[in-house]
Image (tube, rainbow, N blue to C red; front, side, top):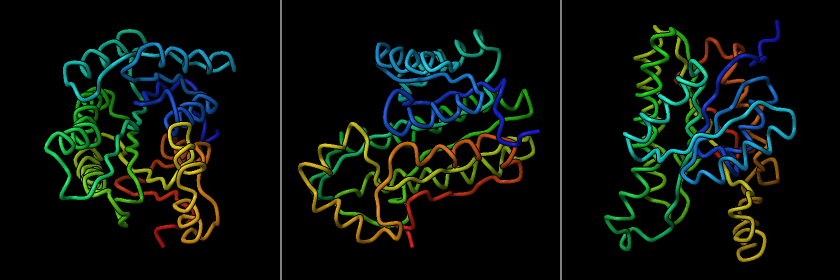
Length: 253
């Protein structure tokens, strides 16, 4: 049996319509899973799911605002109603506000914490209830290497990701007896459509600094996280829970 085979598994990926989320969605689908792409803008989610189906993969889209518990509940009920269960949850949705601490507003704080931490907690809670019924599940929370090393102007973001790491440990401890594994995948600087202009055109000096500090000598692309995500979602990681897997080219060293 292939330990990395996800055939027959149902995987929900929040923010799965672009960037790292889309890369992970493709990776899980290529490993055999049916992927449910969850994001706020229905048209973007449908377009991403269609792109996977054009490649012969199994994917659908369900719109939801994961900062709203009622929207999360509706999304989970829709997936359970249509597909029967949720085997894998990838909490990928995240936002960043880059400002000095003295300029952070209450609205900035709430925006980042609600998206990066509150939303993940309630997605885990709602999906976790279903996984407990099935006595099985895999949850992958997408954090950041900034949870362990500081970068300028990311105080609230770093706080949210450090909290996410600890939430992951708490869930792993509480749900281990239900055969639910909860782990963190912590990326580094990643060239996506959203930040390509920032790093490649507007701030190449920032990119050079990352390259100088990264032993692998390059930045990441969404495809760099596929192997780690499939590992954490599959039977290959059956005895791995509560762990933080840094996929950052050695930057945290």
